[in-house]
Image 1 (tube, one colour):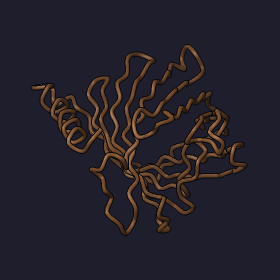
Image 2 (image 1 turned 90 degrees about the vertical axis):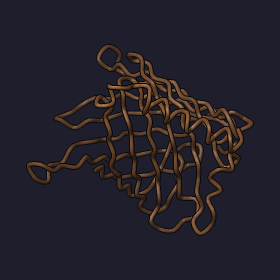
Image 3 (image 1 turned 30 degrees about the horizontal axis):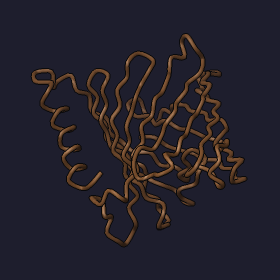
Image 4 (image 1 turned 30 degrees about the vertical axis):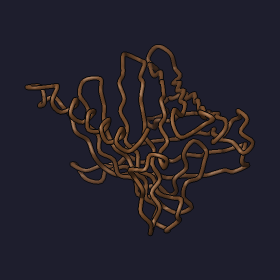
Length: 226
């Protein structure tokens, strides 16, 4: 995908999202905020070794979502920055999403419109815990990854005394592993709860214990969500 095709595709998605709904624009929901994470660990891989600020902005219309998400670590680590644009569509318990990942570098031009700096992923997910107590997702890189790396994850969400918990295990190959073979790279447990600050203000908190057997690493990550 070259620069012109990327810009044209992005503008087309935005145009369709904003113009096709006509008088139903009032039904478009907008959500934005930021997370503060003690460090950024994604799919068992460490992307920062210091706290990271992770803003997001998302538009939702019926089953369609369009949004942007970023992570900027506060310690100045060169590889700790990320800016993603994504779109997803859900049909009942099944969802399909596309994410364009890019990785800016501090102190240098982002080269954002040079598409060789991006990676694109298609992911299919299943989430219907009322009838089947597991979540399943499978993703594959579709451009700027000659190996088309695959990542899949299974989660088991449950609740104990108003605390939401999730047991998860994820596995991948190529870019996700040290020897490119398919292996478990991410398993652990996360716990989430809402903390009330005042009658009108509360924050979501999440604590995650994460293990990566492939790299022999372990992490304990805490996150505040506003």
